[in-house]
Length: 502
Image (cartoon, rainbow, N blue to C red):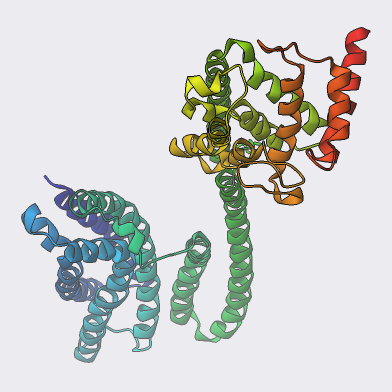
């Protein structure tokens, strides 16, 4: 049995269940328990109901065949011959099917029962087989209309549930054959608020309306003079019940809407990068949803921490590998990163910016991979051509990092790699930028890089004392290096050295 056959079987089963409850249950009890009928009248009423049901089922079956046709055509064809238009049409029909069911109940079902019943009742009254007055036919229409609404409500919710499996199968077929999800072309939206209000109002009003109608028939049989007072009482009662039902439905909807809105808001924040758990104060099914959301948040945070740790280790390994190429500059990238972080903290930068700066500083010399050893490791004075090659390494470094297709969040590290040899006076390289035109990462890393270069030992000289290096940095403020970052670095190093002495 395929999915469509199961769907049809479920629809028929649901229809029989709804009919049993509404038509044969409520409707039959309303007729036979309200009216005082003689044996001949019982036979007449039974005949009217039987003939009307045959007419109703006939009309309803024709409409049902028309409603089911788009889905049936898809499942009766070979998979290879099904077009995307047919699948989309079938999906949209399945989506609309609960509403089509309501229309089928309220038009061919209701009218197919009410019209022939009316005609047959008039004939039977005229022929003497029934003895009650003609205005009872109006009461019968009112009762039939209420029963039809009850039936339509039951069918709507049962059909809505049954359609989900069929829709999933149609989505799977569409994606498998055409790579298109038909749910993206949805043509129907029924809000939860509408469903709850309609169901709550009707279920609250249905018993009192049916009872009022039955009571009126009983009163008209017993004492017609009591009808006016009765309907005043019934009208006030129905109004109060309607107001209470509406208020209760709104409260029920609000209790569902608020946690749903909160979850939607939380997911939107996750999409924006704000991965924060929710406070779970619910004691119903929403408690499980919020717990599940928080587990998801915890998993995301754990994954991000692991990814961040792996990324940090990757940057550190790359920096160490680069420094290992020249034993005399071992640890240079790591120290430049530490000095850069010290400056940024003195300038009270945000944590996220400091993290990006650290990554940029660790990779600031990665372009040296592209420089030949005989040039990079030369101990003597470089020729003009060799120095021109050296000046290309920041650009090479940027191209290397770009080549690994880093994420958008890591793009800010590139300017620090490319521009840490620019000078404030415009005499640096590679682009001879000056002043504020030099990216901020480049200006900051330039200070840290220069200090470590001055204080580290080389094969041709020993590193200079910190004080002398500080003096050179101060002399170069505003010409070679950014004044703010030089001052911040010296201030931070003074504090660090004093702490070490203690």
